[in-house]
Image (tube, rainbow, N blue to C red; front, side, top):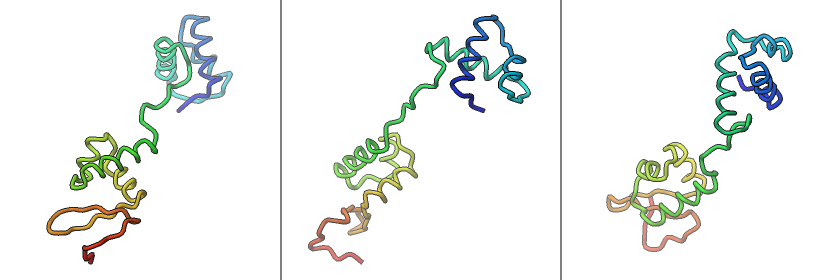
Length: 130
């Protein structure tokens, strides 16, 4: 269960005011029913001690647009590479790679036992696609 910024601030203030994990006061004021509040309170206090802030940090994953551009350039550099290798190299899950490839509308074709990808907007000359 996540707590609001006000609740996290109250937990930190009461912890440093009293020096103990004060579950009863928090439960009475915010009307939160929980079997044990010790673990979440300790986690919030540890986060405050580590970062100096009660709010959670930003996610470390890159934005989706950066993933799309990264996969697009990797696919243009080496078109014979499989999606599983692309996902391992870029650090993006395989299912996300599939969705991105579908999003940018690359189509995979088999020609002479090789995988060739063609952009949906490109003109195909000299290939017979079945």
